[in-house]
Image (cartoon, rainbow, N blue to C red):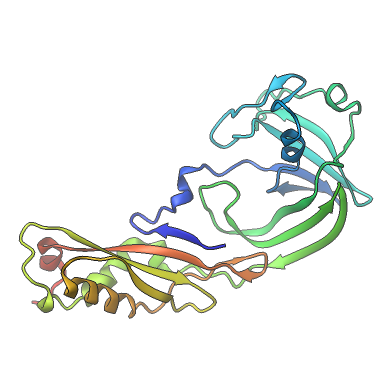
Length: 264
């Protein structure tokens, strides 16, 4: 899957959705963060999104689902063992599992899919859902609540460029390399040219193209030429594989910018 990021203040488009508090998974004596919500498949099978006849609604932007579940993986079987109202634990309240399911330890026979367990160092925080990047990911594949496969992926080849991390250095590079002698008098205008680039396996960005141009051809040509000089960009990994990411970077042409960056 490819995502498009508008690089203006280096906020991803998905930044409108807050990063979510995960469920918990008890496995092999450890309590792990779970970036999957197996209960959602159960809730989708119900006519109402409710537990104990209590409607599940968002309690904060970090808890849209309205609960935090604790799961136990034992003998390759996934069990729901605790269900908290909301995601915060100041004075927690809990649902009565026996009332809802007939037992206090509930075999998750409804769940088929992958459970994602982030592990190791946080490589890049993304303010959206479960989109942050971690050094490793444990992927647990379930079929009707039974663990069928367990794979740990290494994402340590992940790389964050100083240009994406620090927009000032990116724009310093762009505007210092524009041949301002070729740019016509823009008067009071500010003209934006958007350049698309894609991260890949190499630190050198590829697939650089014009995303949205100007009627003034030389502006498009200069923006493209300079972006092709960019020495490095990010490299993203997810589940051990290169995760291509698309960016759209605005290059703003104005007389004020010329005055700041044009060589004397």
